[in-house]
Length: 472
Image 1 (cartoon, rainbow, N blue to C red):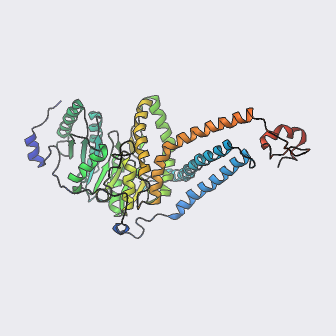
Image 2 (cartoon, helix red, strand yellow):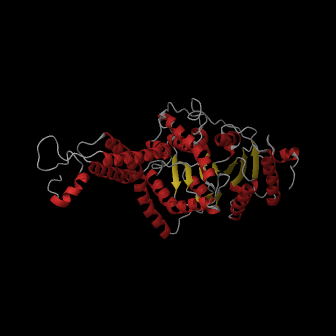
Image 3 (tube, one colour):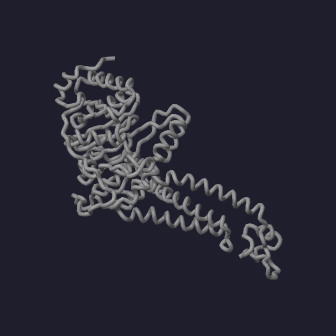
């Protein structure tokens, strides 16, 4: 392995305060306020319909979801018995209403997504071919990751961009927050090796922070304030991300073609799984990922979402509108915002930029946790970050669809206890039916049993002999 090159020589070449990086151009990234928002500060749209979504799409998805919810709740109410419901039955009905209504939204959107995917498969994808005029910084934040994997990915992607003739439009940055000294040394060694291999034909840079304040948010913010103003767009990746050259070029071209676009998110596909757990996740994501993602992209339209990576962001939109504040209070609900992506998309949309999900763009990839333990570690972090959104969902000025994205993150973890409670209450109902004998005849004299004193299901044995004449 080549050793670290002379720092003075590096500074003379790049004229930077920090070796291995280009010239700094400092610009403030103001912290946004969640407690109030001045609507007059919202930017004006360049195109008449630049940030306007189609209301019909919301009516189709949310309207059908509402109808399904009403039908399902009514059917469950009929099963439990409309008259003389017990307390446990009421609890069961409420839990069913919450959980069933929640899944009908995804179901309705997925039906739309299914037809969209079928339509896309039959057509040749439409791609722009104009020459890029802006500059894009490709950011790969890393935290104690395998340097060989990171630099191999950068070399593959950068070489493909160079072969496409757009090398001048992209600069590549490894933004390290690594705390392990051995990994840090290997990162720097791999960086110099890559520069030597590409012979400076590809602009690759490396920066390692001494203190990883605010984690990934602080890492990206540090880049934006020091170097971000030199670039029109930021293509944000993860350490395990990989994208095809055609996808990256199309993202940059779409961003240049739409001056109102603030963020374009791709739908990553899972790859490189070697364990059974990883392969199961890949299979599931391959089957339902395009369907669910396509439906979500269709009905959210200009109020899409950001998943933290494999997306292109307009630098002006991010720096002017998405500086994240710390949440008041101590963790887990206070402190730095962990699930920053949803919040950044909401703030960018609040400022008047459009946020879209490019469901028609393939060639965007990421890896998944190889084991249940790794999945649980990541999920614990996501759980804390999404529950922090309970403090953000009421922020002033947010679009109602942006709030629905935050609610989705919250419900992704709250819904599990709700489902568990539904199962437990259902077991309680079974015990009630087993050990509490139904009363078919009330205190008043009657020749026939009535459903008022016993549910219809309890009268089933009597129907075998007397028919359905006394079952309402």
